[in-house]
Length: 497
Image 1 (cartoon, rainbow, N blue to C red):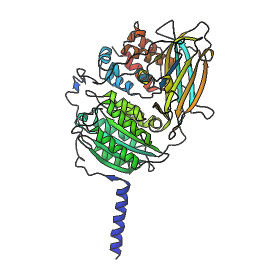
Image 2 (image 1 turned 120 degrees about the horizontal axis):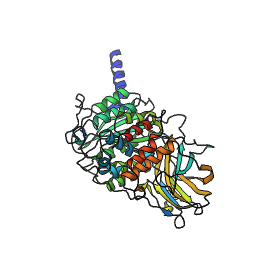
Image 3 (image 1 turned 45 degrees about the vertical axis):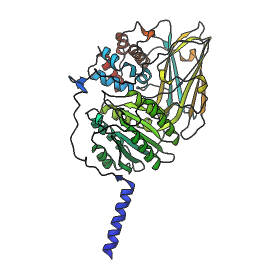
Image 4 (image 1 turned 90 degrees about the vertical axis):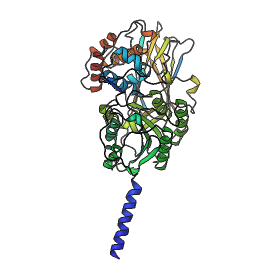
């Protein structure tokens, strides 16, 4: 009798354990590190002979607008940083500036270069969600204009919310190189080490079909989660459609009320089975975002990389898009920036700047070309816009032509939805020239240099006299002893030929 009770007790304990964290059977537990594929590397560098992204479109540069004709500038917030880490990878791999421009210039978005770095912005006050900072400086590339920098900073929360995470991992044949699946596996180790027993993790893979590798696992079982990730091997086609559907199904199954429910898609973006066009994927993800599940995107690799698809999924899925060029970036995203990576504090964030025609005669928004919205979209709560995470900051730059007596410069309005709400809130600010005029410093020169770099990469008609030496000159006169990322950029740009 005692033996029977013991047997039943052990059976029930095992069943409960499996129910709380079930792993799908796999024959791929043992294996070896995957070497780079020969068609991806050439003489130690990334092969630049291929097309970086067949669906990449040249950005139509924002032009100067006359405030007497159109004084209002409206656009969606953007905190993606993929462009910067992609550019960093190419420079580290020996690209010259001309090669960088010819191969990936259209995929390097200026606002993502600027927003990669942290700046000294005011924190929110009086219970508001955003702290707003603005500076008016001489424009370094045009002596007849001024450079306006505008920063919005959110506060980090006192504690973290519970996570319901679904790792959606591409294990198709195109992921079979060192900078893709093996780097992906190391990347997730930084995240799994930061989870606890209140978090839930599921893992879905997709290749020729989808497979549930792990379901509903408690976050404190980091060793089990990482073992499941490390067991993965790349083979087959890329049925992203099946993987997306299964990931949303699991995210909804383990949904945490008042928690962070997020799919983290990791891929090189090469979808060739099922939904394969940007439009099809956009429609599917847009339909799903209303269910309270976010989707962020981690991009890996090169060669057949599809930047346009990766950005679309993150944008339409209420998430953020990162490009992982090495373990340093993985540690940054899932270590130092973990809160902003996982926890959204504002949905559908839209900015609207109304310039005063007496003070500003013309203005030009730098970057954000694919984030522009119509003036009427600003108060339309059905229009999707960008999301901001806890501790995130957004930097916006304008080139301005000022009137003779510049006083009141502009009114700023920010609309956003709190997570889980459908109705937007609106914060309004008035900014005068006197309160924001300032002299350049290390951060403002870095922002200006990144703007100049973006202009050079995009053949800007407003930077025809710019050279790479101008960019270097803005950076070389400063040191960044307390910020390793800024110091690294200074080193990268100084060695770029």
